[in-house]
Image (cartoon, helix red, strand yellow):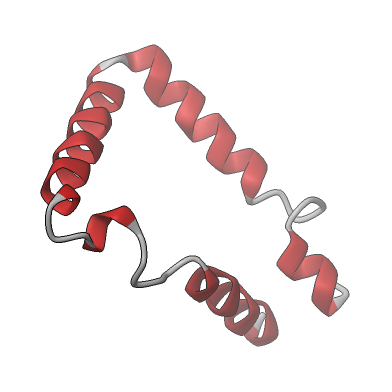
Length: 73
């Protein structure tokens, strides 16, 4: 489990870069407002909320997760 945790953090950090639109001085605020609006809509529509929960469950399926496959679990 410890190896899985470190591998998951490494995979997550690969997505964290300074060149993303959220860090742009002009577009960053618009990007943030767009993301917040999207999350509010997804939270208020029950069908979208269920679909998001199902997709997260599929992502965390042990057989499909690349980090677990890499460490041989």
